[in-house]
Image (cartoon, rainbow, N blue to C red; front, top):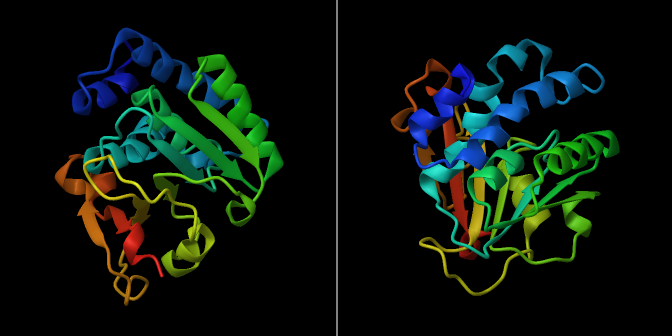
Length: 212
């Protein structure tokens, strides 16, 4: 097991051998694809596990999706947070959507290489997607008010997870103005992960009944 995967195992010791191998493969896959298509910042390639994979899995620290949950990852880019979450939750169905076709191509290739059977990728915009989901996840693709407009009407009415269906959004920095008037709960990732990178990182949870 690589040192980089060790940072994930430290916080998610329940990972099985298959999941560990899948995580190990991510490093070479993203390094290779990033030379062709800029799916993550070049300055972050040496910090892939901390700043992209573990950051994505911050959502799992506030919501443990139950089997058969349907999750939409909006603006997935190169597959974050969707691919790490799909590795962690193999019995959960993930749809990864992005409007940039070349990034979805990378997602498709990585999903196929990892043999992730619980992921489908879509080239398009979230607003035009007609499917329903239990949760929508994303990583700072736009300001929260605009994002909530994109995903209105995309949720199943029935709940069966420990928290009500809704949005789980990875954000950083000062969110006071952006979240003004939005009834949400904020989880600070520094209470789950000790790395300095997570000092200002958050998961913002907006239950579906609070999405206007």
